[in-house]
Image 1: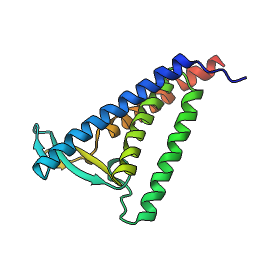
Image 2 (image 1 turned 180 degrees about the horizontal axis):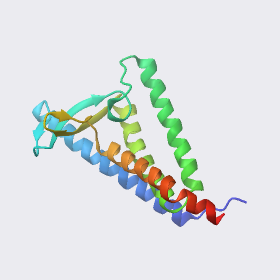
Image 3 (image 1 turned 30 degrees about the horizontal axis):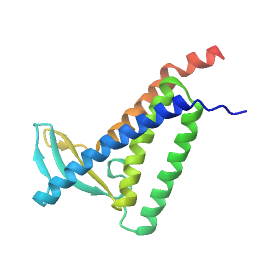
Image 4 (image 1 turned 60 degrees about the vertical axis):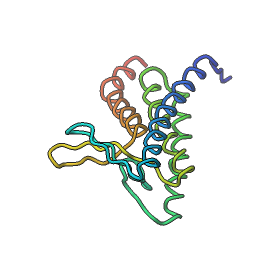
Length: 165
């Protein structure tokens, strides 16, 4: 029979909620600046600016479309991926589980925005000598770190875990 460890479920849920809240607070802050100033274009350093754009695509503005059907289809795919992440998370342990938690927390932050605003506010602009990376948000940072951790897990721990079994 399937046993549930409620302490682990609660801890995982709290971590996901904290990631979600960090993302929400950062976006609310930027949107409040936009409301007061009518724009967000803040120079922080020679490598980073805060510049608000509305993203209707997926991570880093990829696959942006104006057509409603495509936007809703992408949102549905993100929702399904979130469900798959939850399932994978319940079947994983250790480093892999926490990598999936990072991805899920970020995905839920962006999914909330897609539903609530019909677009995701992106505002972190990294650049070096005129080359600007895609503008992104805090949720994208968590998703990216989670994906990098999953790749590292596969590269360095997959073989070791299979040797044990």
